[in-house]
Image 1 (cartoon, one colour):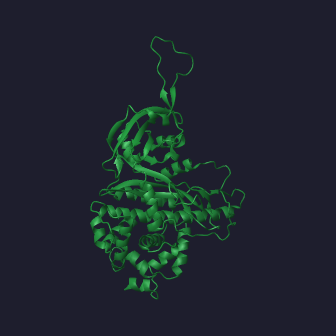
Image 2: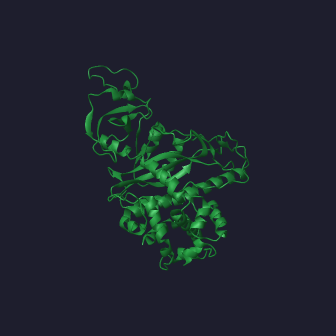
Image 3: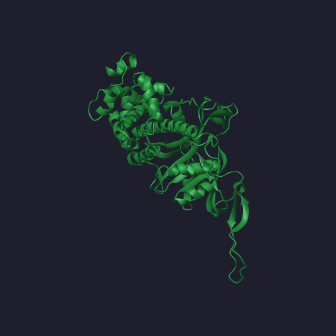
Length: 468
């Protein structure tokens, strides 16, 4: 049964909780987020599981409680993924991490870290400015049948609040700290968009043995290595020359003679041929040789990529960067299927935000006020992390038991294609249909089953149907 395997996986997260009761509340939240039909915050968990009204306040207390340690939960979740997912995508033995930012609209004027944010979109589906939370997230690329998913690992709010005027960390610094928080025991490839093509990111990654694969900024400059002096020529005083001729990276695309034509290695493309060539140049922000790949795509135009690993073949670089969009698909599933960012925790004592709000500077506020803001942001982070865990569990079930998922699906979708793994929504529907059977089980799952049964509200239809 899917729920038995789900419960066995959730049990691996027990060390993140200070008490067994806290762990059971976390498991209850995971189950509720997984199978709920609406995404209206904590109230949807109460409705979906048929809980008594008093459980609403208990759930709010849980999200605000330090009994769930975020750092321990993040490391335990990362260890669980690498231990139990059967097909982590690896290149040269390294897993591939995808990183990106997400901006989530929030209307509350008494929510810490809410600020006015600018959005850039290739379509007109997004407003140019929103009020909301600006987060950065990490996911690991995994395979399931012939599909590739970006399995979410962690996400944190990285803008909106400044606790100290001595804190000069940028979003790039915070992304490096986010990677470090995973507690990885092996080097990885980190793939991200052009925003992360920075010397600060490269130095931080290389320090821990990681490598960066990204798109090159349009104004990037590179240098050819300096030509060594002939043996019979006397060397001048001073440091030997390191940098040779300067070149704009965008100018590399004009060299048509070196292009090689190959079938496209990009995920999902068939019958498409692209042209490319590669060269290793010195990149001044880090002072080392970096591999640049010029790609002429028949539909997407000229794309310039860079990689800090000189042993990685250009087609592998193109293939890995072609999977970067999977983290954006993961964001869409988190927003529309799981409701990972659908929290509504207001802070009653907070100073009301003005309409044109930027970062909230708290270094002149009292210690009690700053601690209250920290507590509220930690509640946001707990909700986000539990939502990411719920989404990742769906992906693990999709990879390990796809046939059982389809047997338990019991619904209809227009396109079921063999060879593709079930999506998060399909697995969630399968779990929703088998949840009453899970509650009827009194075996190893009895501790969670009894915890839920004791809190059912039999005066409502949801509780009555689950208790039957």
